[in-house]
Length: 516
Image (tube, helix red, strand yellow):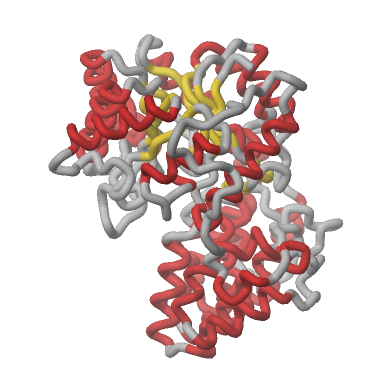
């Protein structure tokens, strides 16, 4: 292979940085994607120069190349994840952080600084967000030019720049600066790109400065271990080799820190298997002081379930099957409600993510997924063990800080527990309806929304389903709540589609034909 294989430190969030680097090197990786964070080389530390010097020496001793990642969750704002961004009102805070990252990258000898655009804030249109993005990137490029450090824009699902073509468009509008390249997360290609990851690699070509490796499912922004999604890993690695990519391809599993050494070991095994025979070279010896692959790596954070064998944890094939891990997790949550914060993110990895009715609803848009069912059970256990205020606070926290799957789990559980936290539930539904995530929007319009959402917001939610081509079968209570105002709105939508020469969805026609 022409490129280095690495691992992201955001997947080792529970390790000291020195220990994380040692484990990564010990497993045979030759590079690291270093996310600047409070506990992993804090860019705001008073003794930053000394810390950077220490990390640079450690990387050199372990033989690790490095790229600098800037996606820490609460580094800039302790209350809002990933805020502010390049499209926020307080853009200057993000720009300052990125310029600090450029300086750190220069001192580490890093390949590049990787960054993303940010989610467009409520009340800001796409044109204004794009203007902000251009101005922010221009300012960062000026600083990058002074230090001679390339920067790499990562398309991120749900953000202003979420696809490769948008990243390439921005670069072209800025005059194709030599120091601005692309970070490509191959899992994102599965989730949101119109072509597969290998094709995206070829399209990015020599603009590719950084690659993140993980698996995903179409339409779902959730980082999975290799083999759990639909990424063709072998074809992707072959495409990187084909274009002569010489940078870092780092495994990106930011929600797997609870089992980081084991996950990183499995990832290396998968990479070996997917690589052409003899193409992947893994060091046959380790530098002094590096933890070897068979070193003790601690215990699972899944508490009482940790003694269950993996085969037992994955034996349930559907929502009706009794699952030993889930049963133990429910008991633990009833005994100590705060344990929900450990169990809730782990549900999908343990019980599976398949659709409840796979033949008719393969992505679980209408009827949900097995992990949705598991998360509902955990939240029902939480509701039984807490009062309304505590439940509302925990629902909000699990949603705000969760990934896409966890957010869907909260929304689908509202049908079972939302009556105990109506105000909080309504706010979460409204937040979901502001996104363009089809499964999130569908989950938001379940029975809870049918019972508690105001008419104006509910109607616009139904219309959003038509725009996003979400089957109206996902909308609970449609027969009961559809009114003449909704039909008027759908009629206007249908007229616009016809005027544009586009087909009107069958669901819209059926709604227009229905009686009041």
